[in-house]
Image (tube, rainbow, N blue to C red; front, side, top):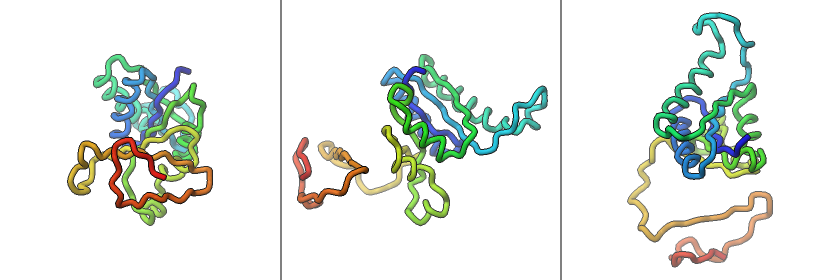
Amino acid sequence: MQPAVTVGLDGSPESLAAARWAADEAEKRKLTLRLLHAWPLPAPEPTRVPAEVDQNYRARRLVRTARAELQARHPGLSIVGNLVADGARNALLQAASESESESEMTVLGSRGLERVESYFLGDVSVPVVARAERPVVLVRAEPRDQGPPPAPASRVVVALKLHEPPMPCSTPPSTPLRPGALLS
């Protein structure tokens, strides 16, 4: 399989925003876009039954509709649908842990939940981000109003090592930094 940008798709506005972002990224990187939809109890493949009776119809329609929208926006992009018979958390974690030759990154929609909401509503992104072996990108459907936009020179990039003990940072958070400065 050609390396892909994998996006988790559940039909929510957040997952559709993530799919659009992932399509843009896949096109920039000249990679395949993989639309991954997981559900735990797929029905056996029906033989000649109407769509309304087919229990897998919704899953197939969801992927087909997203693929058509994204293909219209990105005509030259290779897009594959992937229906997985598993829970979303397991399927996405497996995708986020595949080798680089299979999946360069996993993209998920984010509802931006607080910790308590996330716990009770079963946010899938938290365990995927925490345990993934490949990069994971979280995309929100709508930007939230969080004050004025940052100044042009205020880009911040942080690298995290999640599998090692934390290191203290001696730079106070209120200290202005010049572009390219490192926190220590």
